[in-house]
Image (cartoon, rainbow, N blue to C red; front, side, top):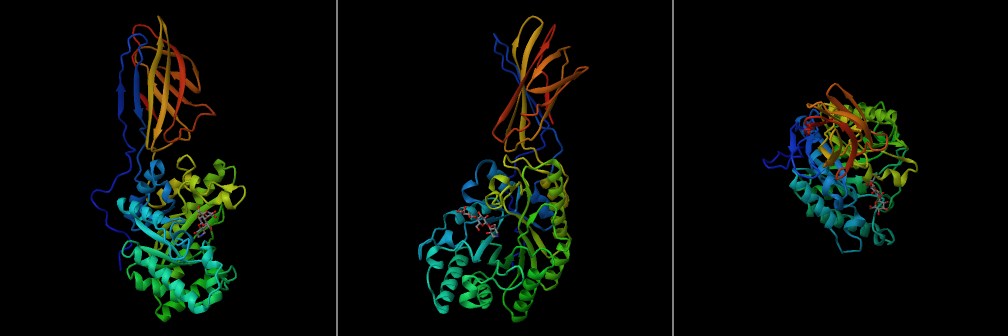
Length: 463
Ligand code: G2I
């Protein structure tokens, strides 16, 4: 079997550096106005990307992705922070075979190619499900034999296409009702519960190296549904049906991580299968508050800790890493903020919780954010200055800049920031309305000051 983590090639693209404390002074001598600039990057302590922390522990840290979004900041973070990708929708039956016999692998291929370019695993999702099937399939009327052939052809075609390229497949998705009875899906109605064993067997025949999973929600703790799944896996193992793992989706609600999560993972592991948390998100009622985000971080930490504690827990995949790419607000009215990054790609406390659970420090990466100081206007004893904070590949939710006036300058007034001077040191922080600097965006504030003798541009520190 393939190891759960591929070795990293020498030339894996690295995420942008987060540690530079360099202070760059850029001088542009425009005689009349005398514009002078100084720029400084963030000087905060660095942390390793999540994927490096996870790999050091032999774990997967994955995210569901949308193929069309894999550029810019979304692509940088998806490629830089995670060592596994799951196509959120791209490998589902309605996407790959919207009309019978006519296949569209575009988005799925794109995700697989991106993953390979970034030395990431791909988790295939999903081959047999009651949902997101094409109309021609669900509207048809099929005999059991026809249905079985359709399913076999679908699984064989799709698994063969990606043979040797995927680490794992969510072969069967959501087979159970909450009480542990089988869901009366198209498949169960036509083929009985044996569709599960058949699907696993066909998938194994098409790609013997892929780890084959059954995946469901509300099976994170010990309950009737997870016990039905446990009994099914036990009997499949006893019958020699190829089953490698169990996926706990983990679409959780704030403050409600099941207390029996680790115990549940352990009982599956004892059956001789892997366990993966496959679709983690933790939703809250909007708006988010600092208290809710702190609770969410504790919840993410609890899930991570449970997986880290059990060696057969392969890892954790989040169902979208940014709130701009989450299914929650579309489906749960008034709920959201469920992922580790907000919609502007600012890491939330949940990000720090994932990092610390994987053995890292809690400082989120700040990417490349710079502060540039310029003197816009200068007269005999006074001047007007401004500082622009710009981000690319990262974002800030609040900011603070400081500098030292070495030539006796003093700030007299500031706007769009709160500034204070103590001795020679000036410190300015965001106003209530301009703390957010999105990736690709900037914020500027201004000030007046006094000078005499000379008015050199100071080195500015952000952070
Ligand atoms: O429903 C959440 C997840 C539960 N477990 C299985 C996962 O496969 C499932 O993922 C979600 C996707 O994240 C959504 O993006 O599955 C949904 C469908 O049940 C996906 O939503 C659908 C929308 O309902 C469609 O309107 C849309 O055309 O996504 C489609 C593609 O964007």
